Length: 236
Image: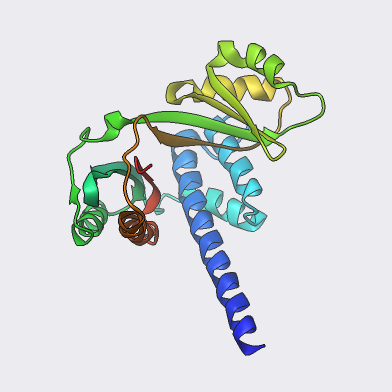
């Protein structure tokens, strides 16, 4: 009984911790969107998308509103989005997306994660060419949705791929076609659950299970950092 309770409690704390990090990330993205395009979601498509993402992640409404209000404050910190590139152990390519209000702190931390794992922080462009940068839209599949018809309807708006998984449809476009696809989906009355940017490796590197464990430990350290948003690798 005691061990089972402790196990459930640990899982709950891990889930809360993960949700907290997601909310922190979304909060920073909302702040950046408001500073760039204003606090009105009707005239700020990026903010409109982030609010939808936040709702999909079950972020409380008051936290969303607080982030928008905070961004309108001139004293609120400015965040800068920076992508760090390098090689982890065993020659694995790694991209680390961050948003930070202190570049010196962030680069020092990211460099230490690489170094302690036996990897090295590289220069801009050293591994980014190994990844495709895509926009990904996710929405619930309705009975009226036919994948082939949707593909034909959306191909002129930048669609590069379409997929279905567990009752949801995923739309993929090139990074620069995000706005065009967002507008097309809105005009078609499709309610998007989430819309974000992801990086997909163009080639994969095979490693052993033991080596994979080492890479995962490095990734976990990186993801624990509040400045880090996403970590991508070309690990098979």
